[in-house]
Image 1 (cartoon, rainbow, N blue to C red):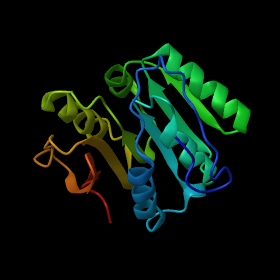
Image 2: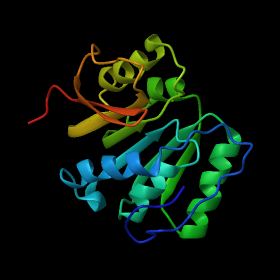
Image 3: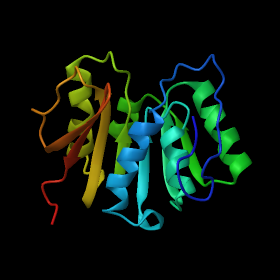
Length: 182
């Protein structure tokens, strides 16, 4: 995987093979950040990266100037890798080793962008729990976005606060917005 833009543009990051990850493809990531670039100033947003895996999305935000980034993953090896990479690149990424659902149940901090990349084989009920907990606990700023990455074979468009989806190859990003969005 590589960083697409910003301070660390072009830098390659190689995660250990033993990590249980499926990094977002460069093509999908570039398309996603083109969308976000038209809506936000990256140095003015707060990001929560759920099921962060290798930290791929967190590094992209950090490279573009975001300084408030929290990465949550249940796997110790993933958290360790993100910490080591963030330190090597001098990126401000806070990591939390936790089950994402347990974290969301207790979280109180609002974020501008919440990105979730759960396992593609999750049943729809588990996918639905993500926006449910985020909106129930008011974790998204009024002008914020929740983005869930999933397989194009998974349909979550019926979930509350769903806005739209974008498809890139086998990847799909579903966008959710607060009902309070102006």
